[in-house]
Every structure is written in C-alpha cells, then in structure tokens.
Length: 540
Image: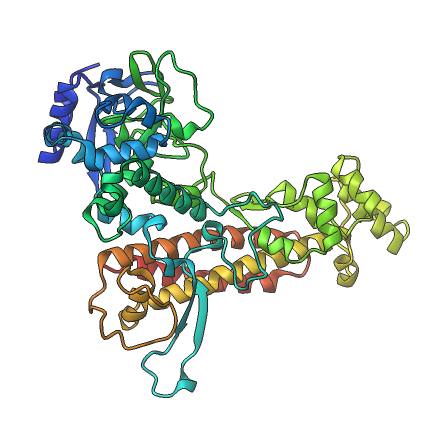
C-alpha cells in the first residue's frame, strides 16, 4: 500500500481529497487513481495491471464516519436509542457539526454529489405530479380541439410507484405487506424528518418547512448517507436486526462505482475497511464494487441511476397476470405458494410465471403434478398430437424426441404448450403497450414546443397539475437541466422495460408456427422507437 500522494490529480477537488486521505492515514495501491467521468461523477481507475486478490484500499476505523463520530453533547446515549442511525447522521451533518469540523471534512465531502445531482436523479425528491397519471394533448398548437389527440401515460413505471391505469388495476399481489419501492422510501424519509424534528425541538419548525434552508440541507445530507454508506458493525457489537442501523461512511472508498460484474469486493475488521480485487484488472480500467444484486428499479430509487445492461435487472408484473385470473385461480395459487412475485428478466419470464401460465390449461390433477415435477409438458403435446392423429407421434418423432410441426396450423394452435405461450405473449403485450404509451408520451414532452407541459410534471414549481395544455404563463421558457434529467431517466427506464418485454416476445414467437409476420411487425415497431429514443437522448 502507498500513500495517497501517488494518485493522479486532475483538479483542485481531487487534490484536496488526496490531502484528506493522507492526513487520515487512508492508504491505497499506487496502481490506482481517481478520474472524473462526464455525467457519472468520480470513479477509481487503474494505472497498471492489478492481479486478483490484491488489497488496493484501506480505510482505518478511526477514519470512518459513524455514530461514534458524533459527540454526546449533540446526541445523548438515551436519544440515540430513539432515532434511526440514518436520521441521526443526517441531523448531525445538518445542524450539529461545527464549522471547524465541517472545514476539516471538506476535502472529502467536496467530492460528494451536489443537490442538483440528487434532485435530478432520485424520484424520492421529485414532485408528486411525476407519480400520477399524465394527460397531454399531442398537438398543442392546433387551433381546433378536434385536431389534438389526448395521450395518457405514467412518467414513472409502476414497478416504482405501484400506480396503474385504473384504480382496480393494482400492483398488489393480494398480500397487505406489499409496498412499492418509492412509497417505502418516501415513508422512510418522512419518518426520519418527523423523528428528527421531535427529538430536536429547536429545529422542528425548520425541519418541517420544505422551504427552509435547514429542511433542504437535511434532505441533501440524508441523500448522501443513503447513497454512500457501507454496512458496518463496530467491534464487539452485535449486528442489529435492521441492517439499515449498521452504517458507516468511508472516505475515498465511497468513490468506487457499482457494477453487476464487480472487479473488487469489500471487507472489514477491527482495523477498518478494505477493498480487494476479485479478478485480474487491466490497465486503465475502472475498479468497481457491487452494491448488491439489484435490479434497475431499486438502483434508481436508492442511488439515482440505472444500468444498461444489468444482468440483475427484472420487472415485476403481478398487476398484469393477476388481472387475468379468477378468484378461484388466485386461491389455488395462494394455497400452493405461487400467488404473486411474477417477474420478467433478460432471460424471459420467471418460473413462477411459468407455473401460473399452465393454470387452467391443465386439469387440477395435472397442474399439481406439474408443480411436483412429475409431469412433462412436452409429453402432453405428444399425447395431444397422438389423439388428433393416432400413431403420428411415433411416425414423426425426430432425433431429438420432439413432435414435428403439423401442417394443420389449427391443430398446432390447440397444443397445450401453444396455449400457454400465447397466454404469456398476451401478458407481455400488456407490458409492451404500457411501456410504448409512456415512451411515446415522454418523447413528445421532450420536444421544446411541449416545454410548459413538461415543466408542470417534472418541476417542483409547476407540479400543481399534470392535466391539460395551458399557456404556461408562469413557466420560464428554456428547458432546465434538472427537469430534463428527470425526463430522460424516465424514458431510459421505460425503454429498458420495453426491451426486456420485446426480447421475451420474440423468443416466444420463434417457438410458435406461423408467427413470422407478427415477429417482423414487432421488430419494425421496436426499431422505429429505438431511433426516436436515440435521437432524443443524443440531443443536447
């Protein structure tokens, strides 16, 4: 390990960071350095090759920022039992830290994201209008009402908000414990603010006032703690039941970015935190950690970014599947432990969705045997074919043991597996429709002529209504950076959802006879939408 002076120094902020690391005896491999990346903040990169198993970063325990860093004059021992660790750390950084200590920490905290970074990327800080159904007219300049087409869609996907196209169409699986990601995070933030206001009455009024400087500073510090902490249990202490109560900020180490294919891993002991390479790392490569096997919805809500590609990404679509089932179907699924938690990922639909797909296609006895692994669906197709054409299965059986396609397409369509696949295609078609509606609506909002409507949805100042066209007399002209960042993140996430659905549909089409026309039409439609998406995302 070397001192921090060997790191590359591209600007004053990183120069001050290096001085801070050196002063706090935070050491690192001489083969790494910090680099700014446009749109992504700061990352850690290699100067030369680093073999697997190399310890490249060490943050001593004394350099960590934890509740132990907070003096008892600010928070007594009794108070610490009444407030979440996250809330306490945010409170101290907001109105407890002295100017002298804040100045000492500035070499490190200056590398943290700005408030605009958080505001533009984390939906928990977005106006309520982004969580509601949006209504716009596609021809705002048309003189007659008949010339305008009204569109309705959601800016944020239901995987975050739980909202749907109608009150009866819910993300809920029937389990009262289900809470959408964004709802859970909003409840956590509001709870922390209220808890802090109650325990620190001298700041209660300011904390509860969204316009106050104290409230805004608390949100900023809360966001930094939410996105930059590592799991840590002090030596000699028992792990808490809630992992959120085991938090530590690690200077310098918080600049390692996330990947679903991490090249490094973390560990800690009494002496502090360590970063060690998992694989051989080539020169000029970014050194990456894993924040967990998280899909993009969780990464977006918790950290303010989405990855593309992300092998851990998935899309829950309980709302689509459950809307097609009868009460007796839902009871059967509940009794067998298969009610809800249906997901789509880059490999297609999950096993739980496969199970519900066969419900109603098989008899009850067959379905239960299928769950137990005692019934092969391909055997059902062969039996069906033999019943339609006695002896045909034996005559047409190929080297792989599969029944060759029948020339009579109507017979193929009656195959049990064909019915199942068409059912799955119908579910995916609903996901596709919702994604396309939202993408098309959001792409329209990205046009400068729709600036006023875009601001009503994505701006705090103009979020009183998400309906109608209006003249936007009190809306400033010229799209702002934060609102456009929010809009683009929404488009990107919906496109990821659409790409997953499209891939799964094409795979199912490829396994069915006579679906070439449908597959070609879907591919053409997808390609046109991709072109529009890239045009908008590449536009400054």
